[in-house]
Amino acid sequence: MCGIVGILANKPVAIDLVDALRRLEYRGYDSAGVATLENGHLDRRRAEGKLRNLETRLHEQPLQGHVGIGHTRWATHGRPTERNAHPHMSAKVGVVHNGIIENYRELKAELSSRGHVFETDTDTEAVVHLVTDELDKGLEPIAATKAALAKLQGAFALGIIFAGHDDLMIAARKGSPLAIGYGTGEVYLGSDAIALAPFTDTITYLDEGDWAVMRRSGVEIYDEAGSRVDRPKIKSVASALLVDKGNHRHFMAKEIHEQPEVVSHTLANYLDMGSGTIAFPDLGIDLAKIPRVTISACGTAYYAGLVGKYWIERYARVPVEIDIASEFRYREAPLVDGGLAVFVSQSGETADTLATLRYCKAGGQRIASIVNVRTSSIARESHAVLPTLAGPEIGVASTKAFSCQLSALACLAIAIGRAKGTITPAKEAELVKALIEVPRLMSSMLHSEQQYEDLAQYLSKARDVLFLGRGINYPLALEGALKLKEISYIHAEGYAAGELKHGPIALIDENVPVIVVAPDDDLFEKTVSNMQEVAARGGQIILISDAPAEKCGCKLVAHIKVPKGHDFANPLLYAVPIQLIAYHTAVFMGTDVDQPRNLAKSVTVE
Ligand code: AGP
Image 1 (spheres, rainbow, N blue to C red):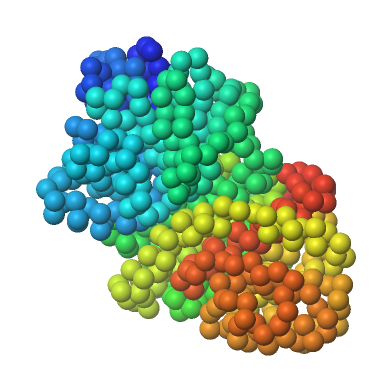
Image 2 (cartoon, rainbow, N blue to C red):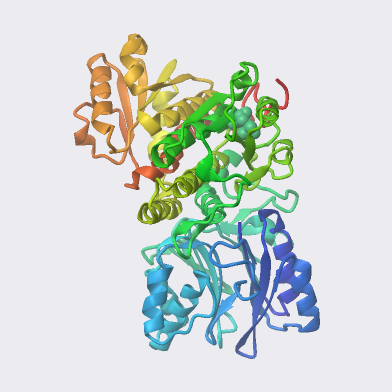
């Protein structure tokens, strides 16, 4: 994940910027840079690799400005070179950016046609030239930035400084978190409270869509519509912790909200955002020749793998065998020569999963693991590692790791399909575009959670809850049931919707909430029939869908609307509402959301 910092002070800020960036190193990066404003002019120093390289550059060529921005870059668009490192600049503006500007290619074409010269492969540079273009039209910095923000599409955070404006910095948040810090005659900007801890513990987190005009004397915050808003100033505890809850009540809430950012970084590890194509690492096996894929994992990671099965079989036309690791490791499953075995694990230390990996490795399979901890046992014993870039996941209930696992599996399916020729270049472009839109669509679901708080009160009275889904939504039903039961302690079961009439329907009465995961896809109508079977028996239906309520033809207790996305990307989008249902129900029940009873974050025993 990239890191953003900014300082408006009354002394040189370059070294403080680097110190703040050092506190964001946990996010991972491959280049860094700072820019300051001195005598009205912007100047910058950037370096590939670690911050010490930037410090060397600054020692050789110091910067003296009292206004500055800094950035640690995790390469998404363009290689991790000094040329692509932030801050990006024109003579008039300096910009640092975290996230994805989805429409940067269109913006780049339009701005280039108006004479703007692009020097890098980054999407960020489109922001530089867009703001510059508005300034060239005669707009003042605030109006120019407001006009530019209205043209940007994607999930991002920005920090901007302006030549000739020594007491001004503008910040904007749309999908990636940003915090503002308050000092004495100084103000600060950071991707989180951790970066600001050396300067202040009084901070404000910008809300989704907010942008802020920062001056030494104070900060004006505006919402997406341009109305002035007040956001609370809170006391941060980040100084003690290297990972904090931000402005969330629980780590789980913070991690649910981090998903747009961490999904975009995980996707960027497997996609070429510039060309809209897959850029998958070499697994050391010819994907065109694999006869079968085996997937094994536990819990939530297993459900991610189950979604992967649907993707790989549908788009790559390769048979997938999948099983929970605690069963796979003992049933002596026959393995086919030349097979690829994929292991999914957030911790990379789950004993059952590791044991199954060893079984498959001994059986001559090519081992690839999708892990969140690259130094873990499962990673070390794999032939190839496919990292999820979720960052540290503290909540025991897995959320952002799940959506990052899905991101890696979706890209694996495309990579195998391209290798096998079952996915054409046009289909590849379509599926990659569908994934690139996910962070923005995810963040649009994280603006308001009142409906989940209302639903939580209703669900808290339930003794049993059913989750239903068809096709690729079936694993989401299983995951939704697991999330709810593991943190609220309410018994919940996930079922394939078509299985209802083979027994579970006996459970249905007016005391049983039935949560239906049903995008308006090719199986929606069949799921509607199941909903009507439930309604006819008094079942209480909560629908999670992009479809309009009237398409269901039955009464709903609640209808959680999901933005319309490509069918391929739906599992990533539908993960958010099932997580929020579980979270708010547990909060209402008063359970220990981050550390539920009887559970451990990593199950390193059988
Ligand atoms: C999910 O919310 C749980 N934390 C649990 O099911 C978890 O996914 C499972 O134990 C697997 O852990 P891993 O991903 O670290 O292997």
